[in-house]
Image 1 (cartoon, rainbow, N blue to C red):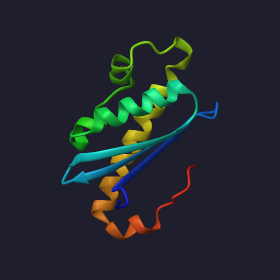
Image 2: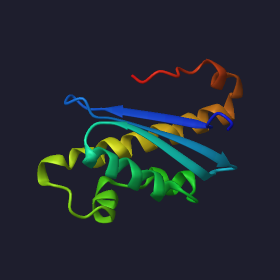
Image 3: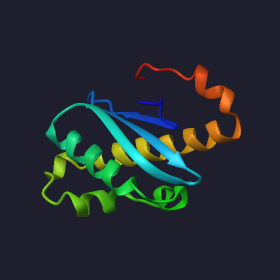
Image 4: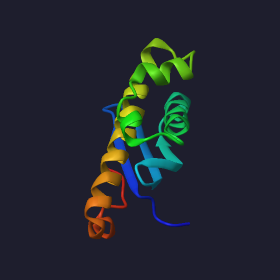
Length: 116
């Protein structure tokens, strides 16, 4: 499997971590993957973010809001809704990483492979 074109991470104070990987073609996402550290709610939010990104343009992804994820994963407890913010933040960071790597491909080889 080739390295992803974009990687985005977001972490919360409570220890939740969402990492999203994007493979792209032009300015669209053709494949996604994700990794989480946290509870089932964090997993659900990351999965929803990855699914929503699939086949969308960078602009569409950057326009996604946490409410879009909450709608897709109805049933998150009120106290766990911050994970939608994390997933959207990680997704946006992955898009920006992909854009940066397309503009300056050499940087891809130097990006950190360890979670922040």
